[in-house]
Length: 116
Image 1 (cartoon, rainbow, N blue to C red):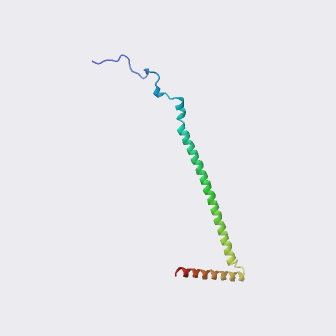
Image 2 (tube, rainbow, N blue to C red):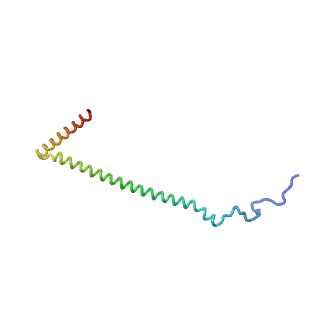
């Protein structure tokens, strides 16, 4: 014996009770759902800002280091120019030879001290 339902089932059937409390969110809960995305957005913004500041500091430091290296290179070039002269005169060449010989002698002495 098959028993036929008294009312047909459809999706338009009413739900009793019509108000389901577990499907309803309060106004406080609606606002609370934005807390996590807002905190995440603030964290991302802070991270990007901190990264940009760190990169700017690194770039400034690298620029200072390269400027200092350039100054040292120019000073070394000036010392070499002073030591070896411009080779336009005999006196400049003689002075350059004396400086070169003194440097070679000093280098030999340092090498001998290292091998002792």
